[in-house]
Length: 302
Image (cartoon, rainbow, N blue to C red; front, side, top):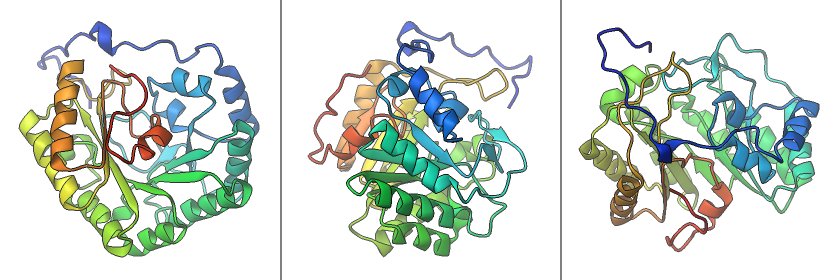
């Protein structure tokens, strides 16, 4: 989504929405390991502002099934191109990298693979299985695409028994045609609903970006919708434009605004809420998962 000359200039980046360099001290070792194991991370491909923090803590969110997405979402910097065939050796290399990093909580996500009959579900399952074999004590969170609503694909992923099933709703229904044109709001809700119907004890999680042009009232509707399908954990963070070629930021929500959103989400009944300027769905995922009592996440955020 390019900005036309008639569009209003986006708001300036406020000081509290600025993050340190992704080349922070302590990140090199992780980058080297990832290159050695020929692995991709969403941290790098999506230009996450928390990359320096996470790599310095020797953690990362692995992006399986390549770095070429079959969809073109206006907020995302992952490349859109014809994907390569799935790499059968990737699950074992991923598990080895997780072991070398000493991870006890592993987050797996992927590009959308609408070119595959199962949307990549079997590769998710194989990756979870490889992690279970190499790191039997590790907990695993999967952050999946919508599989185009394919419930058989969902069954394959759930059969691998991830500790957390995460699928991000990302934005409000009105904005889906602009920012997620190949997705669907009801499709995403239905996927999360199907998870709980098939596996009532499965922890489910979803995330929402703010700043794409939604209103507070629309956010409230999304929060209620997510709770209506049993979502346990919700994350809310500020959309930050990855490049000038992507959707502009419509507004910046203040730290106090995120605290109000957190209070509202808690009033909806979510078990855990993580809300803040730099919050992302997989940021501090282990701490978020272990916040079973719905109290404060045990680290500071804006």
